[in-house]
Image (cartoon, rainbow, N blue to C red):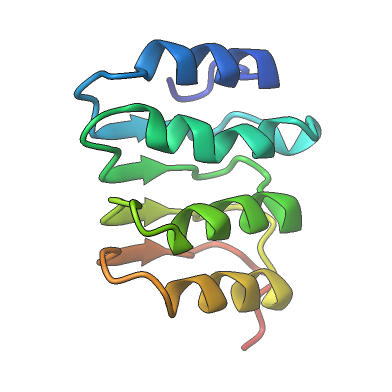
Length: 124
C-alpha cells in the first residue's frame, strides 16, 4: 500500500479490514499522512488490528512529524506491541521526536530494528 494517497478514512477502513487477520507486515510508505490530523490517531488501531499483531511496519516518507512520532511512541510502549522492525526513514523527525521515541523504547522489549535514516533535522 505504498504511495497510494492514504487518508484518515483509508486508514480507518484498513484497520477494520485487518481486524482478526494474520497480517504481520504492512508498508504504508510514501503516503502523505502528515497532512491529515486524524490519521495519526488511527495508527495504534491499525497496528493492533491483526492477530497475532504486526511485526513489521514501514512508514518511510510519510511526513510523520511530532504528532506521528507521538502516535508511534504510544504503540511502542503498549504491552501487547509485537513490532520487531519499524522504518521511520525520510520523515520530518527532529531531536524532540527522537526524545519521544526514546522514552517509549525504554518500555519496549520487542523492537529489534528502528530505521531513522534520512531525517536531516536530527542533530544529536
